[in-house]
Structures are given as structure tokens and as C-alpha cells.
Image (cartoon, rainbow, N blue to C red; front, side, top):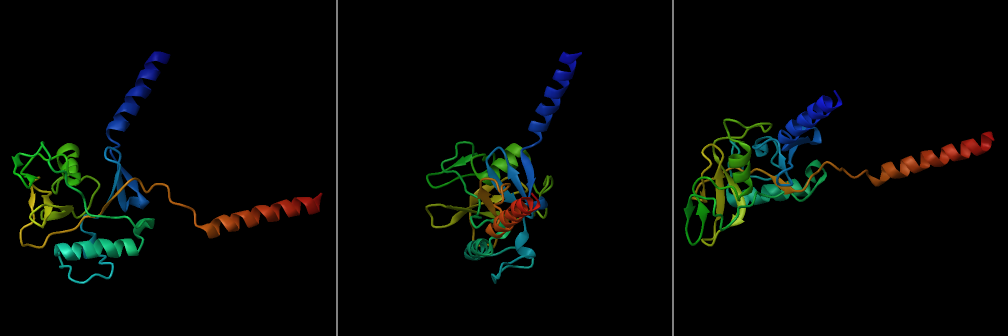
Length: 208
């Protein structure tokens, strides 16, 4: 009987681990990817509702590459979700998993080395199956990784196509390295707690 119970527990834990690649953070405003140690903004088109004071963002969330970088900068200035190290996703080069290889770029389909490619090809996150993410549109998203031609990569979350930026506006999706689960307690809270503890000690001494 104990063996059966132990086996059941191990099976439940194994299933939970398999389904725990994306873990909710900040009340569902972000998701932590346990596979890649990355935290993604839950709203993949956050720029539509929060421009962080940056102009030049279209009503559909598309923007120039320069505006995308300025938007990320505005997010970090605002210390969004308690951190100031948000960035655009990176792309691996060379990435042998990609279907197209040139002297300057790894692209096409099947790319798993890029951070967005990992989500799409290994975790099944697409615009038609967004998982816990919202507003994951069919348009392409900027990568923060430059290519030798002086532009940057992009990744298309509908087809999984990766290539270099053309002269079009795309969307920006913020990510950061690491987990944001451990939010530091503000110093004022520590001081308040210390003061309460000190008051308790004084009261006990007076009572005694």
C-alpha cells in the first residue's frame, strides 16, 4: 500500500514538473520560464496600454526598432514590476537548429536557440496557442540581437519564421534574465517591523 501511495505521489510530482515550465509571477503580470531562467511579460503587446511615456507606438502596438528600445528604456526607468533590467529577447548566432544558414544570419524555421524560438518550437507558445500569455499577435517581434547588416533579428509567433528586420514596424515583447519571485522588502518595512519588535520588548520589561 505504501509503495502504491509513493508511486502515485511521484507520478503527480512528475506531471506537475512537466507542466511547470511557465510559472505565474507578479499576480499574473509576468511568467517565469523554468527551462530558460527567463521572466516574460504576460501581455505580449503591453505597449498598447502602457507606453511608459514613449511616443511613436502605433494603435496596434507596432513601432520602429529605435522606439522599441526607447520603450524598454522607459519600462526600466519606471522600475516595472520592481525591476529595471527588462530587454528585448536575444537570438543565437550561429544557430544550427535553423533551417536557413548564411554567413550573416541563422533564420527560417525550427530555430530553438533564440529565446522566442525556444518558446515557439520547444514549449508550443504561438499566436494561436498562447498559453498563459495575452495579446500574442500574429505580427513579428523584435529581437535585441544585431546582425552584421546593421539591423536586428525578428521572430514571427504565428509561423515560427526568423529572419532579419525589413523596413517595417514590429512589436516589442519584454523579457529579463532570472526570476522576479523574490521581491525585496522595502527598508521602511524592515524599520517598522524592528520598531514593533522593540516596543514589544519594552512592554514585556515594564510588565515584569
